[in-house]
Length: 530
Image (cartoon, rainbow, N blue to C red; front, side):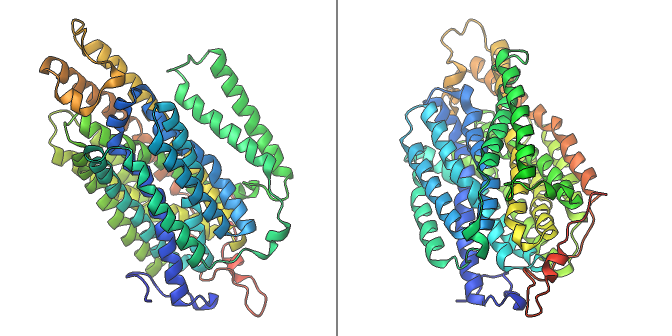
């Protein structure tokens, strides 16, 4: 078997043959495809789905439930995989993901659907992190850029294929197939992992001590933070007993988590990671960029259907410019990094381009040509493709191999926190603004008008102009100004990244040869904050 196009040979010092590397990489591409496709396939089906289940007010939770569950499990998967090996954790993650997909296919109301998405997230949290960490097990940082670029390309491809498949299922056999399709793909992933993944567990796994108290406290603190962002000022007043209790509980859980991590022999998120300047800066920038990324990806297909009158399939097609530039830029940037070893300026440029794209997108109105909307989204794709994968590479290059899973998972955790908070806040603000605008604009005499919870693209398209136009305008005016509000976050990410130190990319993985010297660890010695 030969390596895929664009995939370099394995580094000589690690004695990984071409066939093993090829099989491993193909396996991880299947895992990444499973994780990323499931996140985007619902985007086109979402308006119809929530309309049929009579729960548009819970729309944000269909997305947030998955992101929350994935977020709290990411550090757990990363740390435990450093202790016990990637393979058993990947198998468990895929099986959990399949179980959540089955529940989603059987869902009969919004509550069951949200539970299904949470179960999917419990598995999905491991799929992204472990696929990235497994690459770091066999490819040194200097060569890893093109691999990370290709995995980023898989994500971008899924972001195009997902909405298209979601639209096709919605208009054809039904939205439930957006869940059922994960079952055969998940089975393929399980078989591929079981047979092909050659990475053995670390030798210290037998005496590993799992940080269960830290995991519990991290889950409580993260859940509280997301609930605060979702409910605050919408479902509950900020001064209500519920919000006060949530805030107090989250602060307490976070404080206890820090105390526990300081004393744990194997902390789930080691506090020493934060002594690294590059880790702190890259992680902070990743959080800021993720807010914009998840907001744009999650709600634009809904906008295209409800405000622009596109079908579910057409909404998926309209996402192609953004994802095509994301895919192309991610691969090109990865190849450039592997060839030159330079990377610092790339995410800075990407964050600025992202800010420009978001600002232009916020100017969109009902009269704006669709071609122009797609152009602004393509610009956003360039910004994301130039920044997201590079920041993961920076973090992996900062630490020795024995901590690469933990560091990768911690960076993904904080990035996902940004995405979860961004999605929750954007969804909550979008829903609140939409409800208010509809109440103000829909004629009071239209007593027979459908409730906001029951709106679907087909229903809106069939309404009289006196009802349809205010609804369409409300969707546009509820969403677009939000993109302008997140522009400062992208600019802040660029400002933070200016202070990165461009350390040389490591040319070895473990670096432990016959001499016993750990040159790989030396190459990745963390850059201190001071």
